[in-house]
Image 1 (cartoon, rainbow, N blue to C red):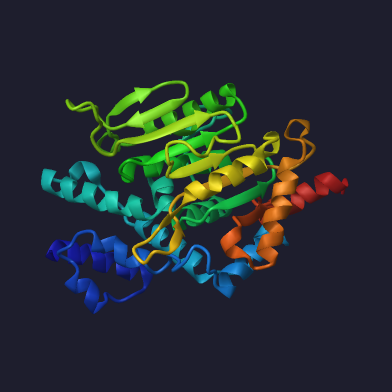
Image 2: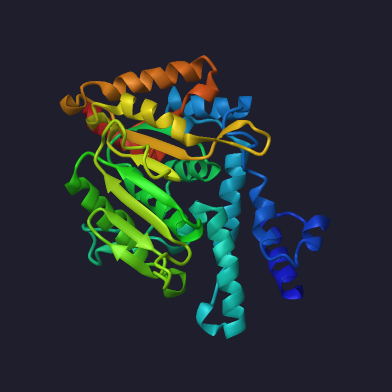
Length: 361
């Protein structure tokens, strides 16, 4: 307990904060080291949004991403991850006991904060580089996606091209496969070839780059599914028993199997998008202990805008439907509309350089 108190004090010092009395009392329960901090940024409701949250979303919807307003819980979320990332670790010099404690502590940290997991442990493929791979480093718009996903919000996201969103959501999905028992994700994408590419590059490959101690047994790995958790003698699967499958779009694609999360990629190419979301909506809700309907599952739909003949305008129609509900403050009836402007990945200097290129000086 004294050693854990020392570690927590170091983390608090990095944040410029004092150790709270209730945190001292909670030290014997190892989970509290991180869950106390988690509660500072988690929303009280996924529908009853605060004015500050609405203003933050609107600043991205209607302006340049770099000009978005501040939002305190998001800043807390980032500060939490960055304080943990600032702590150096000499894993190879640890004793077996210290490594056990470290594994437990890291499990709790990555369970709490996907931004931390991604920047600490994730790699990305870099076909243009000499080594073919590089450490993953989240940009600001990736941190927004990690935050919204960790909060459990469902959202529809419009974006510019090549901003790394599929990689970002692939890592968020991989994190949940590691830490959420019986987690089930449906990844809906336009065709089998796209699904295979996503599995190979965005989920399976990053999984193979994780530390050995963090990787549960892979029980099955096919073109359209990836399951982790060792198969046991009774015919089931040991923890985490997590599964991700890719399926083609259809009106009933969301419904079957009660997925924990549904990811819908390249929504501009899906003509039955509205029908699919409407058909799947009732399966997203359940009743809580008080008998109130709450959203127990998550849908994240994302894609690039433009003239996409295959989609027959379904993306545009669905976007404006969700945006209209949002503007009418019908938050219980809509997914949160998010828009990342094409320049979200640029610094101001890079933006100015691109502006000169487009305007010809």
